[in-house]
Figure 1 (cartoon, rainbow, N blue to C red):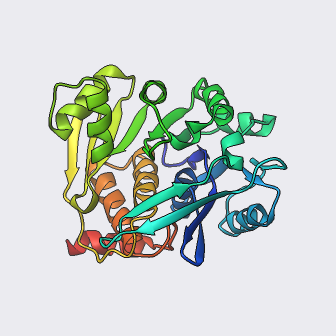
Figure 2: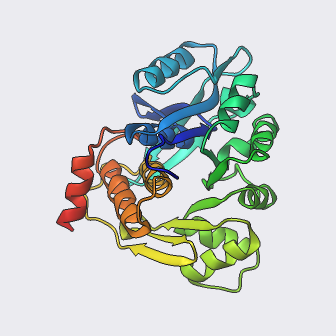
Length: 299
């Protein structure tokens, strides 16, 4: 992609409130990715649905304040705005209780949403939004466009099945897993392999994806790009919570790669971004390019 042209991205999927005890923070993996890309200078947009309620109004206000267009975040009179109860364990890793059904389970495309995707450079989507047939059908329509497609695997039990995951992987140019997700899905697809690298190549052989990325928590990430493997071993940070760290990692990585950054430098930048999010509270903390580069140079 040319450096002279501003990258246009659209994310499809859940927008919701993450509830940490008495505190609410805006979230949803696709929204977190879109917001990080926006912060890095991408023309980012979000296709989703909120309830016609106070929580929905508050999300639209917040998204507007953060600089994203809200014309394609629709309102539902029939379903409430999404809520997720987040529990942090001793290591600050999060588990999620995701309320069903929510408005984002019932995304129906309007003409504006269709046009938005056709005119974008990249479409980001996840697996969670496919737990309901209504949103899944809307996504399927968008997956038939020629836009570069990034699939962010988010396995949240019991909200997935392997047949749908296979279809979502087949549609993608780029797939992002965490290490546990890669091993679980590879095993379900009868992979004979035991290592991350072997299973990345295994998934590539079964799909049309030309790039695969695997995050490894504090141990950084692996990137298979143009048949070459790149590795980052992680950056040391005091973890506040892991919510949204993988989403910001992905937003930073896609932005860097599609703007022509060299793959190793893109991976380093993304790992540092994800680490800084884990070192802050909530899924969308403000992080400067200076902070990111400072962390890379310190390690």
